[in-house]
Image (cartoon, rainbow, N blue to C red):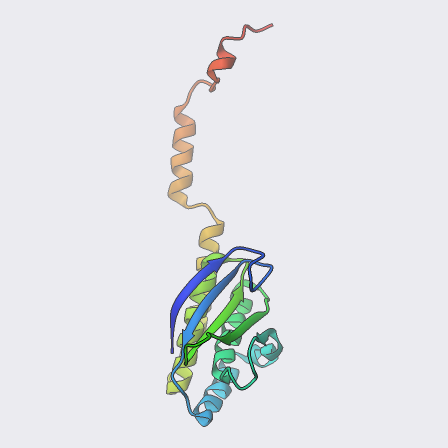
Length: 183
């Protein structure tokens, strides 16, 4: 399983009224028993995931999209809910004329954490399929840090702004205002 393409779309696009991340997921066929075991492991790792089944809509025939694709989308939504307190509704669908490729639409409010959340969801699902462990707490901390990094001004940027403001001793007057005599 891997993400082969991603694009950020502005609001009022073909898929959503909100800004969203459009991703193409390539998925090799997985045995249903293995997918069911991975799903149970994910439910144990992320207990809130069980409630999110209704938050992923399918834009294709019910049999056209494997359950694992919806599980990846549900996992990304749950990771964002836990890390950013952000709840959205996602969509999954089939990429026409491309077997094994699926479209995932994930609306977001924190752009800097949208793609990493989906990448982390694919890594988490892959780990559960392989029977490996995954450090969910570290992943959530990383998502929070990515979202906060863009909200807060960087320290060196703030220091540079302070330096520039402190170096200017006279108030700035536009050339047109300097020629006007005071009354």
